[in-house]
Length: 348
Image 1 (tube, rainbow, N blue to C red):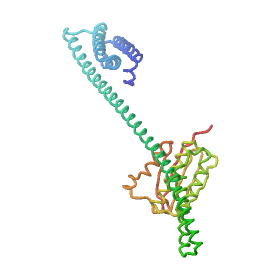
Image 2 (tube, rainbow, N blue to C red):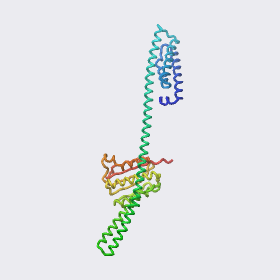
Image 3 (cartoon, rainbow, N blue to C red):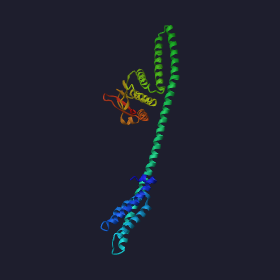
Image 4 (spheres, rainbow, N blue to C red):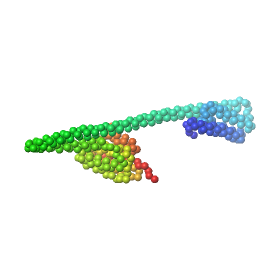
């Protein structure tokens, strides 16, 4: 019997009340039919307990009195004879006391249960509110991060990029002037121009990654492929992309998070793992879409340092926002493997 539901549902209370009265009548009739040789006194505990659950302590006391009256009255009607009137009174008093103890214990137990349920509900509501607030703050942090990323990208493209372009033009004019004068410094001036142009290319590549717009469903593979090519050129490493899920098109928001997870995993492999070979792969099965980033770097940091890594926490949070799981583990051949698995909706 679900006492909480019974307490909260008036219809269940009414049903239990009628059941209690019916049990009292049935047990009384059975007690009368069996005569004085067999006593059903213990069976009256059932309606008394139900009375506590149905209506509380007062109703249970009334039912207890009714049970005692029916029990003693049934015995008298069946022909029971007592040596003194004190005997049935004593039996009734003892039985009524037993019922009273039962009523008190059950009432206390129900009150304790209801109090625990109220505390659990209050704590659950508090936890739900705390989790909701935490998720809202984490979402705001990611949104602020995206805005700052775009702001830095604009500064690189429109600020530093333009400044380096102007510097390259000035250096080119200087190199040409020195070359016309046949100065020996002309070769060095041309080298400086080349270095500045390399800096411009790197600045544009970084700005492009920071200013990446929302990726549509079909654009994830092309964005990952272009990112791997840019990473390979920028850091002078081997970074490849393999697509084993050509027919899968995740939603726009999901594609953005998957790309950012891959981006963070690749950058961690380069900056913290010193990787020279990175493989990014999309895999698909009937149940899930998986993003894998393998590298041949120095491996995972110690667990203590790993737990405080902001990049790992951001990747795990992004995965959680799209209903995916994220894990990073040592690769069998050395280095690490970052894996993000997104469950796919079932198709009939």
